[in-house]
Length: 88
Image (cartoon, rainbow, N blue to C red; front, side, top):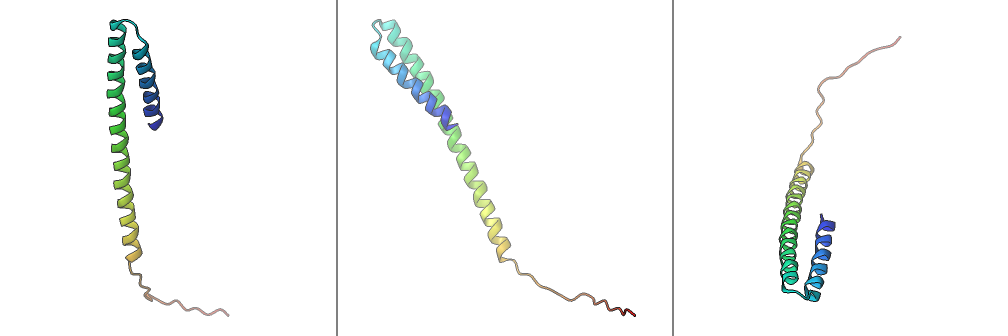
């Protein structure tokens, strides 16, 4: 996902260069629309990435709590029965 965001950043930079070099107002306007659309997509991807990272962090915290609970468990050994036999 980060790769997609980086690729969008690259496309935005290229669109800005195109807009700066454009001679006609129509071309500048088109480039600005492209920049705006790419910016919206980039922002949405960033939010998705942050949401995914938050979900991973919540899951990690749950796993850590589960491990801590398991480490605090007390174990007991009881003699339930004894088996004796003779050979001979």
